[in-house]
Length: 522
Image (cartoon, rainbow, N blue to C red):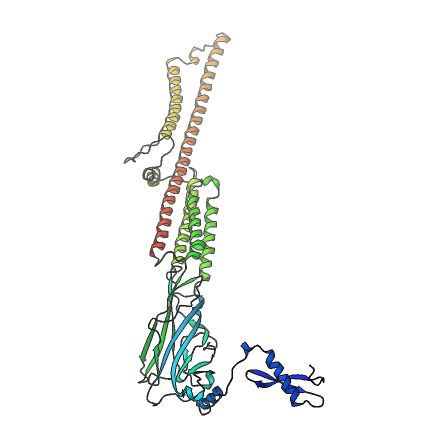
């Protein structure tokens, strides 16, 4: 820029020439008069708004020299070395960032609040222009070495070193914020209807209770008035407790302040994304029992449902810590449903086996016939078409259609036998044709005898064929009856499995929901 003399000058940043603002140094090829320098400073001062100018004085500087010139940051600020320093400790929970179930960590945004009285930092406000407080960097003062014992942070202490507010009566207020990563024992027994209690233990790292006396700032625990709500967890409370512990190694007490972050999982997400699909898939497994065995899809449907539940269980396992201390409630429910679906697959195999049995390979035993054809159909209110559902007698008669078929085949055989008997009886009463045969008779008599023997032979062949046909028909009827019995037994087993697995699914679902500490937290 150009000065008042018209010569070009260069403004360089330098030290402050007026309170709170930098001085601008001038460099000229020859020289710049003091008058020019004063004018430039006046112009710069007038260019700055009055609202942004800071009223300055030497009182604060003089006070800092008075307090810190001979201050020792290693000295515990007490009048008597045998007296403990009273330290008030509290915290403000701002946000729950994450709950890592797999690594069992709690990540939170917390503001600590430490208050103590430093006897070396007292002054009379009237001696220093009415200055009542100072902001001093923490490395310039004695500061209690309070740390979180169960920290899992890489640097262990994750607080940001803010200034300490020092008042004229010696009270010091230190409020360092930080992102705290603490260890937390995650109990997954009631997942996803679980409550978690994560403790954060704070205490001095080197001072015992006779040197530093920690006091809980608020008996109600931590401050949650500024808490930012979390989408997965609901905050129940942050109670605090002062603990005074004596160890065998040392006679001095060691004091710590323990805050417990009590949180409850919101179950809406898990209910609609895990539990409801699991119930629907289990219902599809139940509907598989209503498919006819001839459709060919009963077994493939059961296997597909089993694989789907396995995928859901893997999704739950990915969110759980790899621990054997407990089995989550949702995992138990999924295992029960998987057991039910696997059992339904086994039952489907048995049903298909029964359905495709026939007389050539399997013969139905008496106890199977009694249980699956009479007792269970009566209990399940099942009956064959055309027959009534009645209690089975001690010795059950054959079904009406079977009796009718047996009667028809037996009557056909009886008719054939009657024809045979009548033929034999008539043939026995008449003299054989050969008796009328005389040598020297005419050819007509010989032809008659020959035709008589031919009729007898043809009738014998016809009766023989009728016996074969009748026997084959009776055998076919018996084989068809056996096949129908096996198919009906398969229907009975299908209906029985449908009822049993439906009851099992309903009972398991109700047991899981009713055993949970709470069902729904939105």
